[in-house]
Length: 268
Image 1 (cartoon, rainbow, N blue to C red):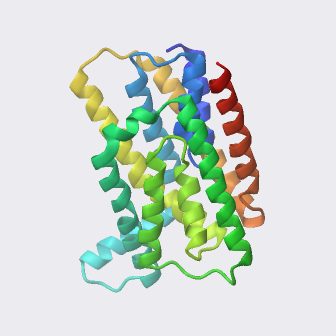
Image 2: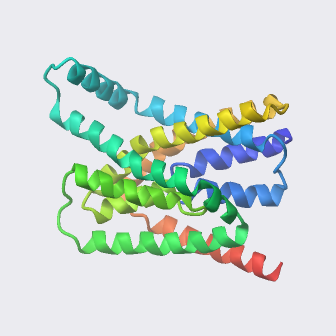
Image 3: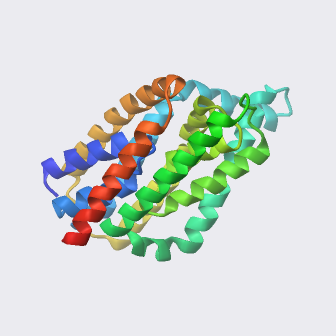
C-alpha cells in the first residue's frame, strides 16, 4: 500500500465511520477502485479502527469519565447519578447483540464484501433511514432512553455487520424509531461505537499477530493519523448538524451512490 492510498483510505474511514453512510461499504468500494487489497490490509483496518475509537473517546472524554466514576461508585456501593447509571447499563446491553451475531456469522457475512452487494445494501439502508425519518415526523414528542430501547438499538446495530449498512445509521435510525430524538440517538450511537470499534480493531490485531506476516507500518500510521483527525471533525460536525437538520441528505446520498455503483457493476 502506497502513501496516497493510505491517506485516501484513512480519510474515507474518518469521514464515513460516524456518518450514516457505511464506512465498510465505502472502504470496499475505494479499495476496489485503488486495487489496494495488499498484504497490509488487515493491519491497516485494525489500526484505523483504533484511530476512530480514539477520536470518539477523546471527543466524549467527559461523558466517559462520568460513566467510569459511576461504575466505580456503584462497585463501592456508593450513591450514583441514576441517569449515568442507566446510560452505562444501556450501553453494555446494547453492545451484546452485535457481538453475538458477529461471532456466529462473521465468516458467512465476509463473503458479501463486493461492490455489487454493497450497492444493494446501501440502497436498502437508505430506504430504512427514509422510513425512520417519516415515522419521526409523524410521532409526538421524543421520549427518554430505557434499557428496552437500548436493547432495541443494539439489535439495529447488528444490521451493520452487513457490508454497506451503516452502523451509525442503523443505531441512529433505530433510536429514532424507538422514540429518541435525533440528537440523543446520535449521541448514544457514538458512545455505543466505542466497544464495537475497539473490539473489532483488537480482533484484527490478534489475527495479524497470529499470521506473523511482515507489515510496512509507515503508510498505516499515516492513514491512521488522517483518520483520527478527520473523525474528530466529523463527530463535531454531525452532532451540530443533527440538532437542526434531518437524515435526508444522507438518504439521498446513499441512493445516488448505490445507483451509481450498481450501474457500474452491472455494465462492467
